[in-house]
Amino acid sequence: MSTPTRRVRSLAAVAVLAVLALSACGGDDSADDPFSEGEGGGDTIVVGSANFPENELLMQMYAQALEAADVSVETQPNIGAREVYMKAFEDGDIDLLPEYNGALLAYLVGEEGVPEDVTSPEEVYDALQDELPEGSETLPQSAAEDKDTLTVTSETAEKYDLAAIPDLEPVAGELVVGAGPEFRERFQGLVGLEEVYGVEFEEFKPLDPGGPLTVAALKDGTVDVANIFSTDSAIEVNDWVVLDDPENLYLSQNIVPLIQSDAVTPEVEEALNGVSEALTTDNLTEALARVQVDKEDPVVVAEDFLEENGLL
Image (cartoon, rainbow, N blue to C red; front, side):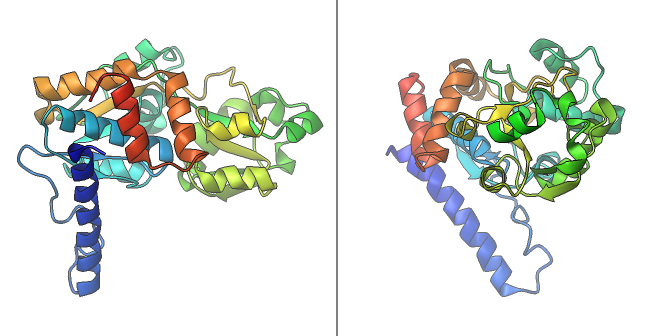
């Protein structure tokens, strides 16, 4: 393990210990806020991640690539769903996030909805530029893509003759769907499924966003339909069926660095562009399988990826 990688890891550990210490003391309104002490500052870039394995892996890729360029870095993994980590970003507690262009655009436009003619990676990226929080920007996006999906077991697909999301409409009233809690209120969740496809499920089970709880629930039959990310190795391992999305409810989801503009320097831009250029859907899926299936440390997997692509 390289010294820079150990430093990223140790900084994250220090951050966690600091939060625990504050919680133990009590009597401090900021005790439950991991950002209350203003981590980072100066020239240090704080890199955050959502609360699912792939995003943490991407965070490690970004952080280690920056450290290799002699940029001071701290990490904040597993912050939560987009509603949580974007607040931290907009508050200035996070400087950099691995994001997904379509999901971020849908979040930022809210109830207004993404225009129907905005579907391709380039169209989504261009539309995103008009919606970004003040003082932030996106660097060039990667060809690598990880889309939301509705996925079922092969047995469920055969039983109900399911190949695409519209096929759910006549049978959804008999089915249970599982996803992260925010899926209930998002347009790219239950709201859009009803509005775009007329799909209303018998029950919604709030689990985790494409994480192990959702995967396990689909596997053991607790849910019949699951919101799982397209790069998840569980789809291939279990021979599950991803339902086609003919109305493009789930937009292009290319991976893109979202960064505070005042954190962008030539060194930062070159390091992050290197990661984006190296990423493909296939090699990201392979790297994620090492984390999800082989239970390897994302710190190690990220370091191997960067070394294999000449970025360390």
